[in-house]
Amino acid sequence: MEWWLLLIIFVVFLLTVLATGIPIAFGMLFLNAIGAAIFLGGFQTGISHVGRVMIDNLTNYALMPVVLFILMGELMFKSGMAPKMIDVIEKWLGSLPGRLSLLSVGGGALLGTVSGSTMSSVVLLGSTIVPEMEKHGYKKSMSIGPVLGSGGLAMMLPPSAFAVFLASVAQISVGRLLIAIIIPGLLMAVLYASYIIIRCLLQPSLAPAYSPEQIHFKEKLLLTLKFVVPLGSTILLIVGAIFFGIATPSEVAAVGVVWTILLAALNRKLSWQMVWNATMATTRISVMIFTIFVGAISFSQILAFSGVTQQMITWASALDIAPIILILVMMILMLGMGTILETGSIIMIVSPIFMPLIYQLGFDPIWFGVVMLLNMQMATTTPPFGVNLFALKGVVSGDTSMKDIYVAGLPFVACDWIVMFSLLAFPSLALWLPTIMY
Image (cartoon, rainbow, N blue to C red):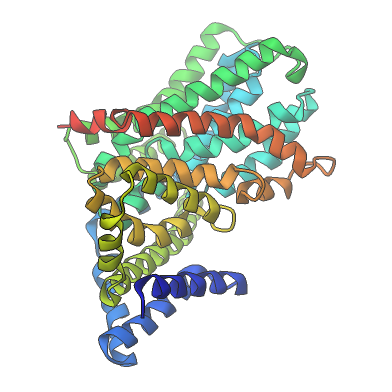
């Protein structure tokens, strides 16, 4: 059978599984068992192979940061420290144009970074901050758009659980990828904030000014020292330790968890119930992510056993087109997949197919990892079928149409495209920091 036909069969099977409502991770494990039975000689052999893959890869030390980063985030939120930090940041924004829109971008980035799902952060913000903005007279373009944009920052700033997950699946350096996303993520944040401020200055009616609660400078400074500096120092500790080679991502993530627990104790927010709730939430998210991870790894092995991977590389190498064209084709495919799949599922499907091609074409895998993360986030917010668009529609007020959501999200998608083309034109935006790491 031709390799391309076999690849189509694999992908169609996965999409069929998705359509039935069965979790795609379990569908992929089933496909892997069937593939192993066909290409390795028997169903029992196939089941044994999947079992060995699960054991070998779930004991992978590189996966440890995923659990610890998620636990750290859950402790921040379950203890109430993260919401407090967001409140303090709001007080510093004062009368800045579009202050609540700016807050939703920053808060969404923090929430999504530690929640493990950009969709869940969009839903939470859509049901909490959006009504608050509408109460103050914000138009839909300034209340809905920033919430959609915040998901991109969640994925593109460390400690990003999805970045760790992608690095583990693609078998590239976790630390280098976490450092590589910093400049693109900050560039996105600057573009989002600039758009919000400039648009609100040109059209003040989009975000009417109102008088926030007046707080003395000294009180704001004390609140900042109490709630912002400690949690901010946690992020700086993680980035700094990885960058300077002081500790591995797993080690620094463990230190981050311990530090967060100490901060909760100092703020008198530490309790057995809080730790239990954070642990259970972390367990649920981690089990989901690890199941997807095992499915992705075994899927890549089935592609290799069937000969699809090698024949695909041979075919791509023989094409008489610029390699960047293949990158653009990959991006278009991921954008299409983002209309029906969550980010973790996209990583699971495309990494085993795309990464061998990236190595063969001579592109830096860290750079492509950054491009993949940004591309997948863009897919979830790109009209007309981005999954986050429909997730947000389910929680906003009934008078908000899909057209309102499309129009509100487009400027932030445009900002993402600016960053994407910048990464394609200047790979050093992603690679400069990793090259000077210790």
